[in-house]
Image (cartoon, rainbow, N blue to C red):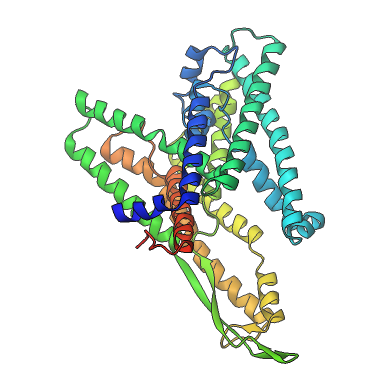
Length: 420
């Protein structure tokens, strides 16, 4: 391991990228402690003990939302804008054309995504400010205070978006993903402190803590295995002569990932189910409170709907982002075929059938990982330590992608890699 790290540090370019990334992490963590003006921190702390949507988003902001700092919204508006643009690229011909234009087209899509981030961020900030106003969490409930809070939160999100883009350009890895990664990992010491307090006061015993540790390690191994899992579809390219040159005649494969949708289905399902609970906190009507109680985190109805929505969104997102017909058409265009199948529609039908089956496995895996924290909490009696679901998938996925990028840069410089 030490020799692998020395190989990394020998490369000046890679060393500079890592230092720059860590510096941006430091700026991010400093920003999580800069409070938004006009907010009553005592009331804010009470809002995060009810398991509402704010508490869910606090995980991705690295605790910035519970402190209600300028980074309270984290990078969530940018993620939402990116997902919306990705979906619109499939249905809007102009966006689809830009996506096929290469670098110039991607710049146009990125620019619109930035504008969408500012718009969505400001709308979300206004909603959060009015929600705090309804809960008497503002020192001054005037409209001026609401506007200042919304402006501060939007500016913080724009700064995080810029930091993420700078990390992608000058650092190592995907900047936006790494910001979320840093926010989640920063909560690890707090989780360990909670477990230590449970042991100290006698709420749990050492055996329960060991069970928690074993399950945590097993979950990490399982997530890595499924995240790396893929079905390789063999593809043969026929030989063809163009002028005096011969092309093709080689074999390759199409890697179809088991978890093609990533963490998106869990985020969608969590947001949908937590929305009624959050709205109920701002509406003092008895039947609304009763309905919201049905969707409380961990109830049988909520758990069942959570799993079903994850399966649905997994299929939906995979169908939107993967165009099987275009994939089969491109193979036919360049003389490729799957052994034993005719090019064109038979190939598309086969790929669709295979993708449907492995997506079922991926969706059940996501549902299992998302629900498992509730089961673990019941077995070990450890409450308040969020381990699993969205956080685990993001941490493992980002760590694997970043390691692959570092490995590629190390090998480019003719050094031995560090991934065995």
